[in-house]
Length: 318
Image (tube, rainbow, N blue to C red; front, side, top):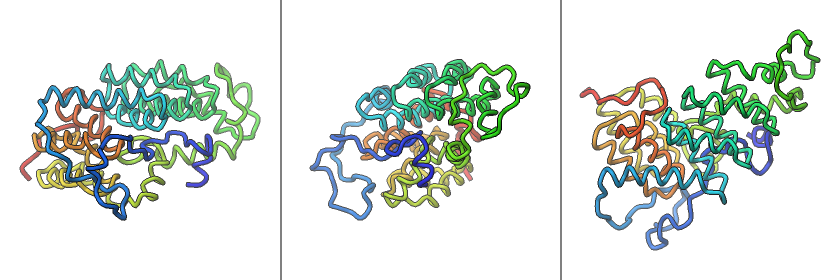
């Protein structure tokens, strides 16, 4: 992880998806539990509120996402919001927020926006991503080219060729048709080894959608990555017992487990799954709140989620 953290800038990792940051003031001090060995333990004992209508919950979900992606004081909030927005497929409203974020001043946010666009698999995002191939930051160029390639768009082939070429001089014939500025760092094997490691280790990491820093954050905060992986695996099996397991996991003390469970529940339409997701709008941790918001909108049919194996279905009895 030390190598990966040094890729783009020491203090702010590219694609710092769902890096820790519980928003201040989300829960009143009086509602906080006694100190616990796990800083990500779920806040419990909050005052009971009057149940909200489905329309109110839908508005709240959108507000959570739009406020976070527009938080100009906290880049990590914008990155986390983009990770959640990437789950929402070709929805026009979420795509607009993603595309707007591609012009952000923060390199981490621009990378997160490109990755979120790729995660949606929406054809409408290819043109904006192409516009990022000449970004001043080589990391953005590279991630844009790689994302386009995975979307079967070869516009960034010259950039990927420069990376593959390393420190060898690329022949004019091989590079014919080059239209993008090739940053010298793209030819630096040491630098690009870091970029490649970052991407190869899966930028789309677990429930967080984007960013290797999430992995390190989970370890720092005591999250059990084995449990997170197990949740992602069993979520592919749409049965009533699995749904019950996922719903139970939304109240787990582990941040990563809660976020993974919320993402998995996006595939379910049953009322108990929808209710569990709505409950997480008040979670102490922003990654969970935002993942729950996006998952709620998908689960209720307000938006169609990004294409994945096992789209939202009605659970089988067994």
